Length: 311
Ligand code: SF4
Image 1 (cartoon, rainbow, N blue to C red):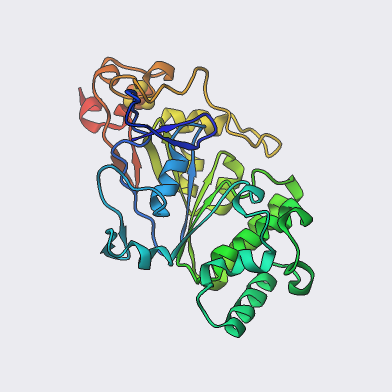
Image 2 (image 1 turned 30 degrees about the horizontal axis):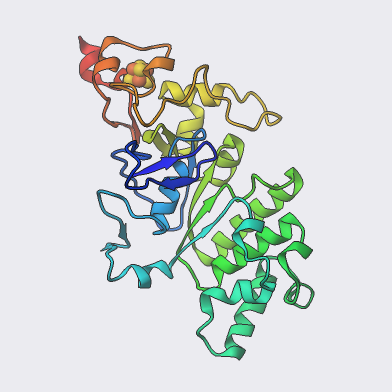
């Protein structure tokens, strides 16, 4: 169990602490090879927890992770972890400020021969648009935010990963730099055939980069489907409110509906969105909706229950 703080970070509960919450509850998710799954949600929705679990940095208390058909266990996690990387929101805090850029990027491949390591680091820094001779001997503080994020992307790439979790990788950057990093990520994915999970609270970024979108709310998946379907006709009232509140590209942040995201310590009964939902029915307060399959996408809302509609 974890507590998710306001900034989305995880705090492990000490044994003495009696309050525990489920940051994610009964979440099941498939990510397909070479796609980008965008994960959107407000702060506290569980998106960072989901990312850390899928990147094998945290273990779920229940359930299992399967990577390319192989269940991840204590015995094979070390081997599989080499194929999975994570890039974080704030590049400066995800690098050791006392290390030079060469050593930071080379960290995941520190055990390979020196010459081979130098070649991989050089090629990868150039792949992410940095001049090896210019940056290799510098410290992170000597680079701009955009250059620092390019370094952390290079560090994620040197071990040839097949899956990268990108946790708000552009939200700490200036808008013009954000676009450059997004385009870089798209180019890398195209060339290397990597699978991405892209966590963001910026709905336009999610729309730009994703093939499919998962909408998270209070530790639950509310809607998951292709970008085209979800944006052209969102089915869940929460997704509808997120998308209708972004009338133009000038408004980029998620504008959630009125009211607070519920506490995960004592979430609302039934549908967790019911205190904020304009369509709430009696059943919503009592029974949690399952994910209904609607033409290739899944939506957790009683409005989509065919049996209820017939009544
Ligand atoms: Fe609203 Fe009910 Fe659907 Fe929840 S299940 S989103 S409360 S209509």
